[in-house]
Every structure is written in structure tokens, then in C-alpha cells.
Amino acid sequence: MEFGRAQLHLILHLIIPAAVAYGFGQSRKAKAFWLMLMTMVVDIDHLFATPIYEPNRCSLGFHPLHQYLIQPLYLVLALHPKTRWIGVGLLIHMGLDGIDCLFM
Image 1 (cartoon, rainbow, N blue to C red):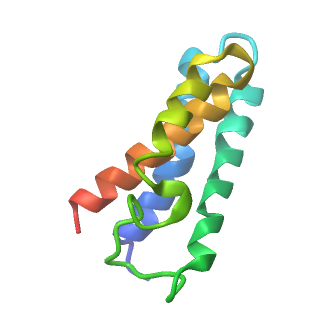
Image 2 (image 1 turned 60 degrees about the vertical axis):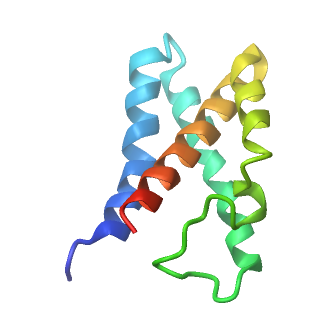
């Protein structure tokens, strides 16, 4: 099995939140990691696309929860202490998807 861009993209969706939680999570590293990991549910909007998975499609600006106009809301979530890790997870997710778009 060849290790490709899609596999690296998925692995980074695990590694980057883990690194951020470890580096900035203070005493609640596990909680920060799991909250950020749960933000992967934002990809549920891929189910509304036809086809569901298109390897050469940029998620940003295409899928409903990946729209540019909704992303400032993710920043607001990151700035509020009670929703910080959810917002950070969503921003990491959008950032990684944006990087993926650059390599298409």
C-alpha cells in the first residue's frame, strides 16, 4: 500500500492537535486533545457532496462547514475560554485542509 497525500493529511489531523494539546494544554492535555479531535465531525458535510470523496477537490469554500464565511466563527470559539479547544481544533482542521488545497 502506497503512503500518499490523503494518508498524510489524515495523520496530520491527529498529530497536530496532539502536539498543540501537549504544548499548550497545561494540566488538561487529554481533554484538550479529545476536544480538538472531536472537531473532525465537521467533515460530516462531505456526506452532502457528490461524490462524497473526491481526492482533487478542495474542501475550503466547497463544503458547507468549510465555507470561508463560517471560519471567523471558529476564531470566536477559539477566543472564548469555554470553547477554546473546539475553536482551536476547527482552526487547525481548516488550516490543514487549506494546506492540502495548495498541493492539489
